[in-house]
Figure (spheres, rainbow, N blue to C red):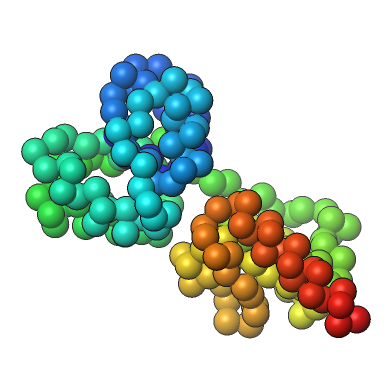
Length: 182
């Protein structure tokens, strides 16, 4: 099984506990930790956190194996196509989707000068579906994929590694540097 999201692990666990007996390939440390915490077997933990790179990394390991990729309805990587082009027999199943909430109370709009972390392309969509971007905001994209999804008018910083811990550290550093200049 391939996991590129902790959400997919929660989704499959709510459907069928038998997944825990099948060796899993995890895109990142946090995903691997979640697999183990849920009682699954981590066959391999990637050294990268991007779908396309993950596919290239695991392709040699998956030769002559049937692979199930549990995923979100909307994905931005070409993982499936990359593996198929390498001759891997892969089936992908949608096990969850991200629902964008709309009509959020405008009182919840972040105040001026807020630092906002975007953890996925869906969080960019969700935020901008509800709030107008304020030029005083500071933005942090969790990684390259989310960064590439940001509208050009949003100046942002990319976390050094694509995980929430580093995104938070980056946001705190932006806040600290901002307060030093004011």
